[in-house]
Every structure is written in C-alpha cells, then in structure tokens.
Figure 1 (tube, rainbow, N blue to C red):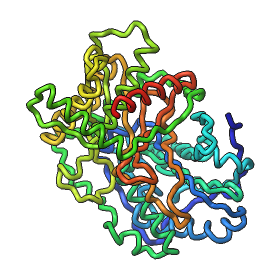
Figure 2: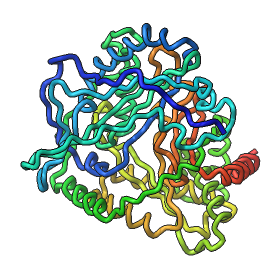
Figure 3: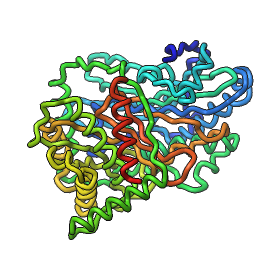
Length: 467
C-alpha cells in the first residue's frame, strides 16, 4: 500500500465575489436546511489528469480557476457567507456581506507518483485517510464576544493540489446546511463552465438558470424548522463526542455496467412476475443497483456475525429530492430532500429472493414519497433515529448518478476520478454515474481490508448468477 502523501502549501488565501456585486443578504433556514445543522461536513474530491510542471499550472490555469470562482460566487454567494445561530427561539440563517470569502488553498504534492494511486491505476487498496490531505477543513467558527452575539460557522473551503507532471485535484468541503447535492452540483458545474470559457459568466447558465433563493416557496405554517432544531440540539447534547474514525478501512469503487443494470432490471421484473406480485414494480437504475449492493453488504454482515437475529430488521436510508413534487424550480438553491427509509426483515432478505425483497422495499419507499412527499414531516428526524436504533444493520446512500459529477470540466478534461471523501465506513455508500459508459453506475464503499476480498467474492458471485 502506498505511503500517505505529503503536500507543501503554496498559497493560503480567500476568494470573494467581485467587490460590490452582491448586497448584504440573509437567508432563513427552512426545515429542509435545519435537519442538517449537526451533520458532518460534505467532502468531494475531483481528480484531473494534467501532465505539466507546477509552474505551467500556476501561470496558465490557476488564474482562470481563481477568477472563475469569484464570478461563480457572485451567483452562489451563500457559500462565501456564514451560518448564523442566534439564541433560540430565533431562526438560524445564512448571512452574506461584502468581503466574505471562501478559503482557497493551493498546494503541491511532494509525491507526484501518488496520483496514479489515488485514481486506482495501481489497484492497490486505498486507505480512507489517504484522501484527507487533498480536501480542506472548514475554518473554525470565529469567537463570539459574549454579549449575545450569534455563533457563526463558515460554509465552504476549497483546496487545489498539484501533482507535478501528473495531475491536479480539486477538493471541496461544504456544510450541508447551505446546499444539497443537486444545488452543490449546480455550483460546481457553473464554476467549471466559467473557468473553461475563460471568464464568460453567461456560459455557466447556457443550459440552466441562475440559482433561485426564494425561501418563501417552501411553506412551513407549523414551524417544523423549530422542531428539527430542538431535536438536533438535544441529539448533540446526548452525543459523547468520542466518534472514532475508521482510518484502517480501505476505499474501493465497484462498477455496474449498463449491461449489469439492464440485466438486473429484467431479472427482478421476472421475479415479480413469478411471485404474482399485483403492484407494478419500481425498477429504476437506483432501485435495482442499490437493492443488489445492499444485499451483498447484508450477506457480508451475516458472514461476520453468527448471532444475527432472524427476527430483526435491516434498514436503508436514502434521500429523495422534493423539488419536482413540490413544484419548485429545478434551480432552487438550498436543501430540498426528504429522508426515505426501506426496511426488510433479516429472515426474508437472507433468502434466495433477497434482491427482490430489497427492491420491493426500496420501490415502496419511493412510491410512498411520490404519493405524499411531506407526510409526517415533523417526525422525520425522530422516526429515522428510532428505526435506525432498533435495527440489526443500517446503510445510508449519498449521491446519485443524476448529479453527473463526471461532467465537471474546468478545461482540463473530465475528471479521471471523483470521490465522496466522507464515506469512511460500511454504514455509507456513495453513488455516481460511470465515467466512460452512459447508463452504468459507480459506487463508493469503505470496508476493513480483511472484508474487501469477501465482499468482492459475494459481489462477483451475484453478478455471475445474473448471467
């Protein structure tokens, strides 16, 4: 396994929108935003091939990258602002004023050969902590003066790392309070388009519209935001703060080709017919792929735990975008996700038709969401916690192939690899489209090294059974 890469810092500055281009603005958190207040920060890494010396990047690419970020922040200014947390019962809000900036770090790798390791060309397992050097931490909140001032939290930081004569990485850390995956993808693609066009801001919105910040589009007559805020604060107080990062885990990225996905759809549809299911099956790419990988993880869990309760449950958590269901504009900027839960009995999913059982559970959760997207909204957090605490094993999904992360081209070409860096344990899976084939799916997992071979054997046997 390769040694952990070291970097030297070349520049540590900040990037703001053009001076005077954005007025002082406050954006109140909706209940969709409030649910993420205590969530860990999101970390996305893009890796690009760039076979030139650092001087070439610094002279020719870095100025465009910095200028285009400033122009992008003119539209996506909340990322340069702060989350303000006034004393209850006041509502938290995002605040931007002229001069606010996004921390912007430029570094150079002292081990350029590490680039091939990070993009998995050497097929050597990649420890989860090996990516941490390339994504920044958010700055600590500024101290308050003790006179009733609001607590403030930064919302984004960016790091560019140069691998001499090999590549460039772009690491972004942001608070989920500011944006969900769809809004974040809107920002990164807009920034990339401006950069690729050498500063033409109009290119960012050639195929889309500028972000829409109208918080009054989301109705909350019962003050659900305050319920969520109270529940999150109570959960934070109960936390021991002794979370241990599984740095010995390794990352890997199983890929489902378009052929795999289509075969899964056909086989599960056939199983529905054989079982005489009355309801129309929901067999999207998301449903069949996640059902299959979920069952593989459950089989691994059962092989490692001989005392599994056959009367227990397995839980899958995923987020569903509410913009279309609530008739919000596609470019609404903020959070607009509902937590969805698929639950299966351990005895049923361990049976021969486990993937069918998993697909039905996921499909039913999606159908329930589509029927009433805001049903029981006031209990989303408490319900998710209750279901998770009582289950045998829980898995959460991050990302979606619809976000098209591999279309984020700053002028260096498409990313050679992209990772969700905060996926560090078996309890989470990231999901994206495959880079080189339309219709395929790339997953991101992290497991103990000893489990990777067992998991791959389970996965390969499952795919073999499909064929």
